[in-house]
Image 1 (cartoon, rainbow, N blue to C red):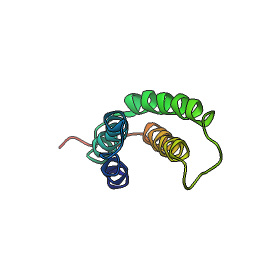
Image 2: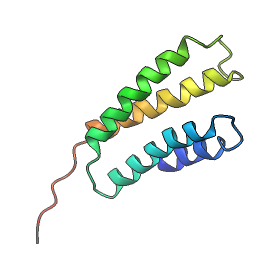
Image 3: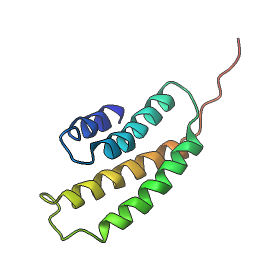
Image 4: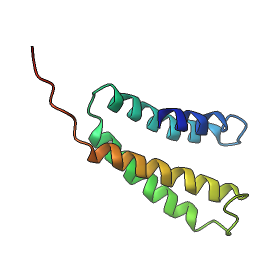
Length: 100
């Protein structure tokens, strides 16, 4: 998922509000990498999921149904995917590592 969100981030550089979206998607990249390397970012992921859910709901009120062509619709979709992935990171418990 870090690669998917890196792609989401890459297409933001020509946007007017690029810094906001790069930070939002970048956070998901770092959470994915932290989780993949065995770190436990569960509570930060839960915080991000909560923020993304509220943000997506606010943007949802500004959509007009152009789900493939509208900018607000794409932003809402990206936030929803980010929210769901952050929830997945939160729900996956870190594995116990035995000490040698």
